[in-house]
Length: 356
Image (cartoon, rainbow, N blue to C red):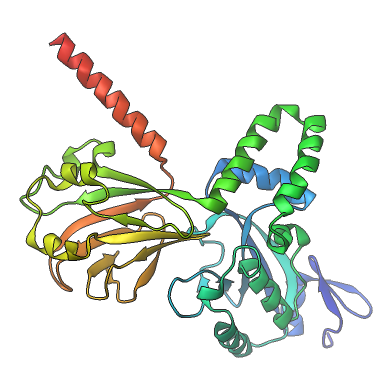
């Protein structure tokens, strides 16, 4: 077969004389390009809204471009540096739940040339310049697809990125259509809209304690879940500090009166660390550069660190020192759920006392 001439359309490569299956792109010296799309938040309500609104041109999505076995995208950073990052294709659980892949033809660029493009983009797409409405992952993917010579992404993915009013302006039309075709879904649609708006403004974060210092209060394994958890709501521009001065009741349960010397030393700044939310990323920020914090098995050397769901944050008096306190991040549990657990526990305790 001769050199492929023309452009790529969904599922096919268009030549001067025929349409060739994308499966045969390799025969033309081209590498397949895919767009991987995620629902922003692992939440059934958001998935419902995106499922209904996608065909109508609205929705809240994260996107990444897959080429040569890597998925490339762009996100927010609270410190200086590029916001361009890569991950295993279709496995970026930090931003949400994978929805679908879209074939966007192929690229004639070699793997080395693609990496050169990424290196250039890293200089222009800084994490501190991220903006939810005007410079986000969808804008980045559109630009990268252009450089690769692939097809542009569908408009339904970029609708919200194009204008902050897209969701609101389309809501009435979609609601009217839903009332006509599926009135039984309206309760779910309304709940989904509220979930989307909440996502754009704040997020519930639960820190579940998994380790306390020796000699402190009863270990977390012996506590009920609500007893070993700290629930906070984090909004963009409104960081939440974590420490005994800010969650006194929770730390009283976890530490008792025997706070270890390393933890006392860390409290010279007034708190252990703070959480910051810049959709779609949750950040850990150190109170000072000399604070000894770990995420997983790695010491946090920079001022801020992106937290994944289920990340484990550990506190130590010094780098290399014994871990004193550890928390597991949980963005799937609501503060309301923990309050209900606490209420039920109190009712059970009261009933047990009366029976005795």
